[in-house]
Image 1 (tube, rainbow, N blue to C red):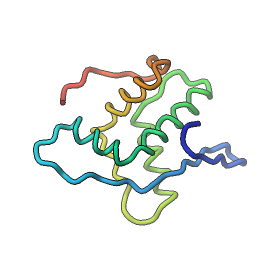
Image 2 (tube, rainbow, N blue to C red; image 1 turned 60 degrees about the vertical axis):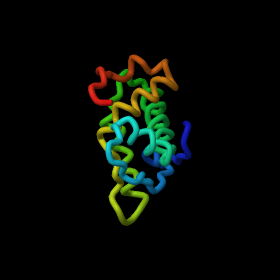
Image 3 (cartoon, rainbow, N blue to C red; image 1 turned 135 degrees about the vertical axis):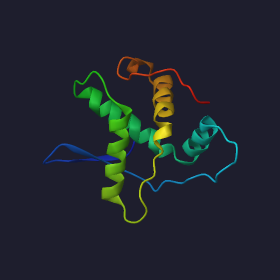
Length: 120
């Protein structure tokens, strides 16, 4: 597993080490890719947790995984571990995280379905 995690012995459920998200200052005219790059730079734990979840899921014999499911698990885990502001994980970044994970883990190519990016 790539991020700090714990397993609840009675259920086998993974508990991720979630951190408070840092959000970049809004930059007028920034593309979605530029916004994602800055968010990712400020929040490397998001990628680490997505990789941990994917690794665990595939090790359990699953063949396909959806980034939407992984995002919801991160949101749920964050809600359990923290108090205060909602965990704001932009759905527009989902496809970028998948592409980043596939660049780092080409063996996952068949596990994720991707479409052509239409927004820069």
